[in-house]
Length: 95
Image 1 (cartoon, rainbow, N blue to C red):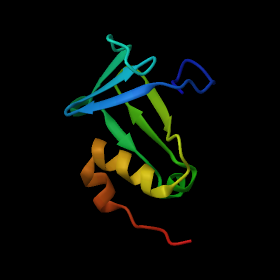
Image 2 (image 1 turned 180 degrees about the vertical axis):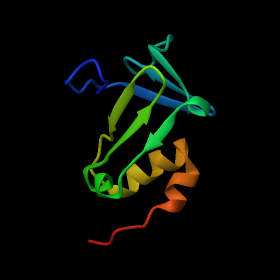
Image 3 (image 1 turned 30 degrees about the vertical axis):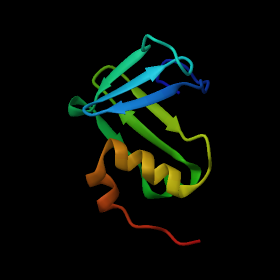
Image 4 (image 1 turned 180 degrees about the horizontal axis):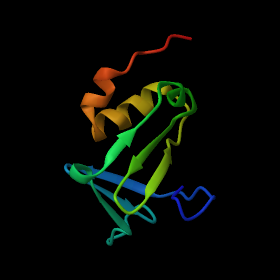
């Protein structure tokens, strides 16, 4: 979900540091959006991990990202791929 809409849209994501490439569908040869992680901020309040949601804020917009599964481990894996220091600063919440 981006700032301009209130609807979730499914996309395929490839992380190639320092970039995040977003594609409309799997196998799409052209990325629809490119995020430079050097100039963006990955944010995830610890209580959001249980909802499998985090955000990527750029200078132009903010993306609210939700993983396809609701496993906390998957969310931590995504966060680690985007910003390992963020994950290192978070506490694992046991349920």
